[in-house]
Length: 309
Ligand SMILES: C[S@@+](CC[C@H](N)C(=O)[O-])C[C@H]1O[C@@H](n2cnc3c(N)ncnc32)[C@H](O)[C@@H]1O
Image 1 (tube, rainbow, N blue to C red):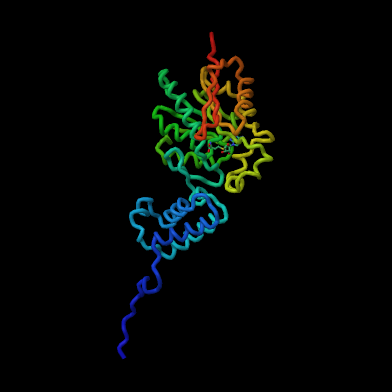
Image 2: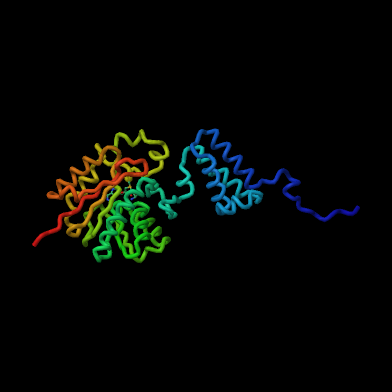
């Protein structure tokens, strides 16, 4: 009897081939059924990451086959998403101000509202540049480096130092600076607030931990379960970090330099009082406030007095 040579079966013959469009629909359905807020976006991000394709390839070739390994990867990511893990944590990255930032478990997932702090620093640094200087910036509690790296990316003449108590966070910030081509203008150090900082800066910026500790467990599960506690915990009233940083500001700010802080809801006046206790004699013209995307007052800037001879 003549035996036919072995013919591998085409996947269509083995069952319906899995395609990007179908797997996307299936994933979206599962995420929607769980009541997640943005099932389409989440599903697209997970499918793209698991298949190693760009959003353009996703949109341009919905009939692209999804291999068994890719399908399994999507399944694993989907299961973790259904358990409440944020997409940014699943992918280990987050877009912030148009730049892609690597995240690790030791870094806060940057929030869009923190773009307000970046805009504030860019505004003040612009004034330093107009005055004929290249601005030097210190970012306290740099995390992923999102504030400092975004500012340096925007302002070619600026340089800066990012500091974090967590060595892994400082390392991630360094990697993000290098990834965005600003590494040569940035230093990253590990330390506690201003304990080990030397030198003088035109602008000190910080988005410190400001959640009152008893409120942390009541935050959304995506925050309480995945952002590092150290990045959230602001002590009993949320203001510990501001109290720790404020007394040392004079020693690191150049005369006329600015300290800019992001604050939590309802904290701005209290933070202003803490800052003015340490920088007495600041006129009201030397205090600025910035609103976030929801029009909520989010950041405060206080200018160090200009020393007179
Ligand atoms: C709210 S997160 C901000 C991270 C990043 N700047 C951002 O906006 O996404 C606060 C950061 O402060 C760091 N931090 C907490 N305590 C600190 C301390 N004593 N000294 C320096 N950094 C500290 C945390 O590790 C965390 O990265």
